[in-house]
Image (cartoon, rainbow over all chains, first blue to last red; front, side, top):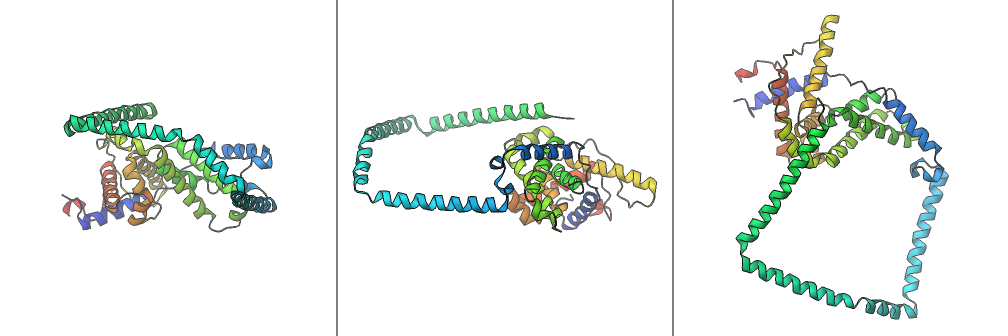
Length: 157
Length: 173
């Protein structure tokens, strides 16, 4: 067996290296250049604010960056000032009371989960393992069939 | 762009092994380059930048669209060891040999494209992009051992497909 023999590996590496590096670059399809140019023309036809930010002019980029920083800073400052207002804490409590019904829902879900755990304990680990295995097999089968379809659909000789 | 389009297309094509996808990636590379046209226009490293972006975009494309299919695709694609082609990698010294050499390169390219992605991608990154095993493992997010094994298997598959003539008769080793 030649597998994993260091001397053999070295010679194989150099032979494959020579073969691969000797390959000239592939000829690009003739449609590549027209496609790029057409896309660029389409982009140029768009108004400046629809173009990528990196394509904007330097002063425009600096201005927009400055405005963005100023807007974020103002937002933080206003948020901080707003939280210090008298009525805000009371408003927070009021909003909290609107969602008090959620705690009942959470406790109901907790009870349901406990019931599921009890049932699972009663059924035994073998049954649960079987269910998980069946689910995994079903998932694997779906993935396999999907992959097979994908390969057959895209197969090009 | 014209001077780099073959290089960019080749880089993508050898990684993704699909002409339509490689063309899409090459287009994206040049659109990205256009956004940085001012920097790249005078840069002596523009070619390297384009190659690097083409490699990264091809790898991103492969991981995004093919990862979930790779396991099954390797089952379907098979070894293909029954279509061996005899090739001698001699240096060309006259026109006749150059013509034969062009055919040889085409056959090598085809054999490379027929390899499963798990072998082709690390093989291309190692031999054509000059990445080390460690860099390939980090880039593909797989173990170093897997990279070495996949590259070895890829080389073996190429050798069997092309019946490469190695120095000092490998059979004696």
